[in-house]
Image 1 (cartoon, rainbow, N blue to C red):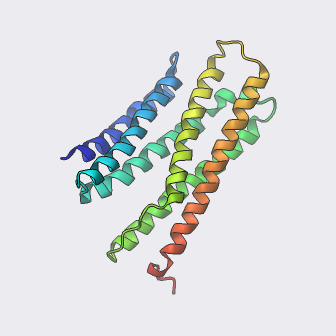
Image 2 (cartoon, helix red, strand yellow):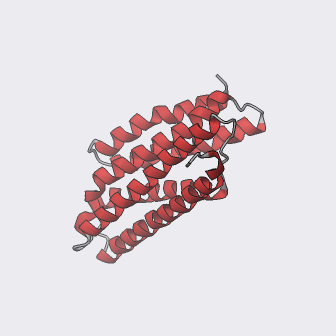
Length: 205
């Protein structure tokens, strides 16, 4: 197994550790989960770069890399949704709105991943590779930034050890909303573009 594939496999192996840090309550657990997520995200950048630079692209890597990305992001979104009540007390009545917004965003993002995976399977059977475009890359980047930010923000909200003002938490919530909203919009755009570009390979008769 070459280095890029080992890095991809490492990313998958980091997912259970990330989930454990997310769900097990101990001081600094959200920070630890965010750190693991960042490390896993770095391997995502490195494996593709190394594979292309040193001509180490393999069929196994083509299969495993997008799978690892989807497993990591889906696990992060599910855990974030499960633990998002940690910031509800700072929303001054907006907790239900935040929860509904987050649920809808997660459904859209995860549905897009399933759709693209299914589309790849269909086109692969016809010898066509679905390439990652700039919208897909932007979606991934913004989603990862949103996850890291919200995890770090939840760390501050959960313990509230430092006496931040209500304005600080309000700003944090607004940024969280904005990042998730941008990720969701990019998800929709990239999903629609994938579907439109590959429509000729779908037999809809």
